[in-house]
Length: 401
Ligand code: GLU
Image 1 (cartoon, rainbow, N blue to C red):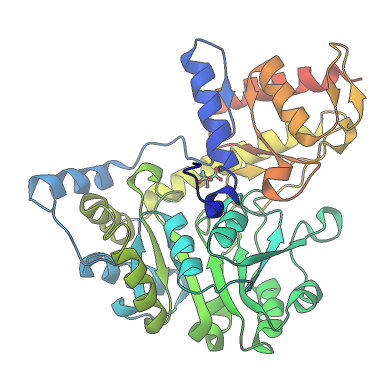
Image 2 (cartoon, helix red, strand yellow):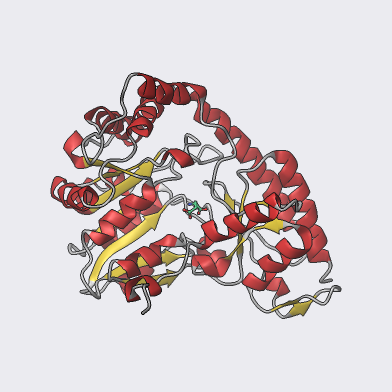
């Protein structure tokens, strides 16, 4: 008898995690691999945050906390949201989970009935559609145009995608995998559509909100349109901004009744996120935010460098995005071409597989993000490695000319 459920068979393994694991394995086998596949800061967690974690262990903060996170951490989050966006929440409207991914999982599992629709602009993060499927919902993928709108969803597209079955609209700004971010006025235009459809809830995935460049200011749905607060889940966490991916702390700010529903689910699955990580996250949210400023400066320089290098390679084109630490170049110039080595490229997946095989550079194909003809590069890697990676990508691409 097959032990695997039909439910699980309907979803795919996370491609970002799978490709990163493959790159790690190749490296461990002694191969010279540069991994640009994982969305993970190369910076170390700032020292004050690490110390808070150590102190948590030493002072015995090693027991269960409230399922949805300690009051201390929830208060720290309330303060952070207020400082960042001037939005006001009560600690009872906050819930802490094991990373942003669990927040999204909780939100979908706690709300979707069979066949409910979730609007997801694409390209999108690999896990949204699978989480929706797992929860019994139906993803409505809305492809966004690269040239016309820099991969940003237009209000008329949102309007056209909404039906009576729509339960959620997921908006990720800055976006993984493109790095593009919505300005306040672009959010305003989307809010105007959402105001007309009272049955639609909004999941604002703001996990990259701190990582924006060229003076761009991140905003969020609830700050732009307070009337939407009663049906918005604002998601954020410590993973990206504070280089804390392994600590697994994400949070939701949402109406109290929905926090209660998600807490019920979390109480029957993981219980509270790690108590030690919670203490470290409190420190991250309340202490000086200077470490982020330093990281942003480095990311911005890397973005400029890699984007320019990619655009100089014949056959590749790349938008320069406002935020995150990803670039999402088009590789359409290589489709149906055969290299001097005899490598034939039929899809973006062929392209990234050959790039890894021939040059040892790991990236993730666009189709994994629901947009074929592109690939994602994470530039959260040392400048030296990025220089070498760009050289290798150029070498790889030149084999096709
Ligand atoms: N969000 C990151 C990425 O896209 C981490 C891996 C994952 O959970 O997908 O690479």
